[in-house]
Amino acid sequence: MVHGFVIHTVGAGPGEGPELCRVLYSHLFGCNLLDERLRADELALEKNRARRMDQIAVVARQTESMCLLRRQVSGRPASDFIIQSVDEPVSLHEEEVGMYGLGAGDPFPQEMTVLWMGAFSLGFSLICDSLDNLTLAESTLRMLVRYLVDSLKLLTNSTNVILRADKIHLSLDRFIPQGHLLFLNHQASQALEKELNNVMTL
Image 1 (cartoon, rainbow, N blue to C red):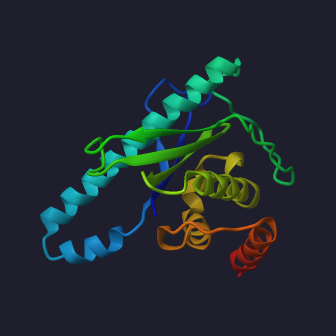
Image 2: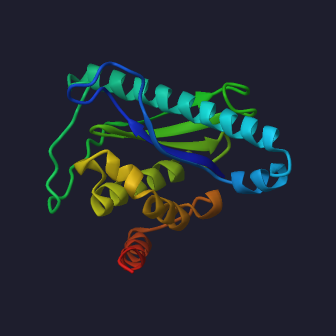
C-alpha cells in the first residue's frame, strides 16, 4: 500500500538562494482517520501533524538530493527550469527516476521505500511500504506524473501546484484510491485519464 505522495521543488529557482527545497503538495493516506481519533486532544493532534510535516520534509530533501546527483552525473544543470507553453506537450527525462530506502524510525516508524521522479523544477515522491510491488509503483508514478504535468500544466509556474491542489488530490484518488496500487494497462489508463479530464472540466 502507498503511504504518501509529495511534490516539491528541485534546485533553486532563478534569483533564489540555495535554500532547502519547498514542499508544494503532500498527501499521506489514512491520516484523516487518525486525525478524527485525536480531534478531542488538540495538543496530540498538533504534535501528530507537526511530525507528519517533518516526515514529508525528510522525503523531499532526500529526493531532491538524489535528483540533483543524477543531474550532476549526467551533465545536466542542477536547476532545470523551462518556459513551458500551455499547449505544448512536455518531454520528460526518462533517466530522472529512482528509488531509495528509509529505515525504521528514519523518519517513519516502519521501513519505507521511496520512488521518485524529477520533472525539471519539480520532484515527485511516492512513499511505499517496503513490501509493495515496486515495478507497479514505478509504473503508477510515471503515469501519474505525466498526467499531472500534461493536464494541469504544473511546469508553467510552481504556484500551479498550490492552486490546483484539489485537482491533484482528485487525480491521486483515481490513480491510487485510498493508497492502493492499481494494475492498469494502456487502454485502462487512457480511459481513467479521459474520465478524470471530464470531471476536471465540471
